[in-house]
Length: 365
Image (cartoon, rainbow, N blue to C red):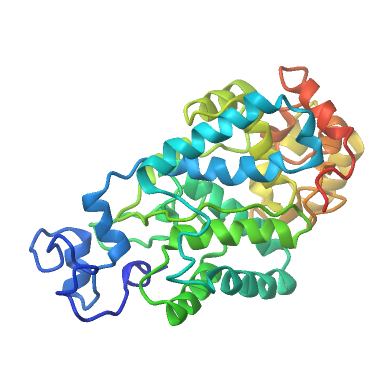
C-alpha cells in the first residue's frame, strides 16, 4: 500500500482543527507527515491524533479480538471462566484507557464500514479461498511486531521509511495488500478520512475467519495507523517455521502471551491456508517425528532442490475451512511445519493438543 493511500484524506481545508489540531501539516520538520504534505497529500486526523495522545502497542487489541472469538466457542467453555475473563478484561481495559477502543467507534462517522468490509471480503474469499488465510496471517504479522497499527502495509519511501514487506517472514510471502487497498478505497468513498487502515485490517481478518466457516467476533475499533515501520523487529520477532517449542514460548511470552495463548493463536492461523516448500522441505526430508506416508507423499511433489515457492495445504483435509483438524493432524504427525509439530512432541503442550483434538467440530459454526 502506498503511504499516500494510508494517510490521505483529501480534505483541503487545513485550517479545520479536526485536520491539523497541532499545526503540524505546515511545518518543515522533515518527517513523514511533512514529506507527504509537500507531495500533495493532506494530514490525516487519525494520524495527527498520535501527537496529542499516547499510543501504546496495539497488540493487546489483537488479543481482545482473538480472545473474544475463542471465548465464544464451545471448546473453551470448560476453561476456568474467572481467570480467562479476567485476562480478557485486563487486556481490554489496558488498551481502552489509552485509545478508547469500541465496537461502535465509527457508528456515526462511518456506519457502513462493516458492510463494506464484509462485501469485499465475501467477493475475495469466494474467488480465492486461500486469500482468507492470507489476510488472517497479514493481520498477525502486523500485530506481532509493533502492534495492530497497519505498519505491515507500508511501502518503502526512499531512505526515510523502510517497510516490513521485505522482512524474511513477509518477503514474497505476505499477501492480501491489494485486498486491503480495495476495501480502503471503498471506505474512503463512503466516509473520507475517517477509518484507519489498522481497523480495516482487523475487520477483514475477522471476516476472513467467518467466511471460512469459523466463528465471528466483535472487533473493538479505534486503532491508529503507524507513521513508520520496523523491518528489524519484523525480522527478529515473527516466529519462524523451524523454531522449537522453547523458542516459541519465549517469543510469545515477550508479547505478554502464555503458552496457552500461543496455542490459540497458532492453531487459529494455521488451521487454514498453504505453505511454501521452502518452509517445510527440511521437515519432510529430515524430521523424525513425521508420519512416514505423509512425508513420502510430500517428497514426491517437492524435491530437495528447486520449487521453493511451490505450495502445499497446511491441512490435508480441509485447507479452506477453519476447524480443529489442526490438532488431530498434530497428534497423527501429519503436519507440514516443524514449529507446529513442536506443540505436540512429548512436551508441555501435548495434553492441551489432545484436549482440543477431542472436541471435533468445536471450531465450526
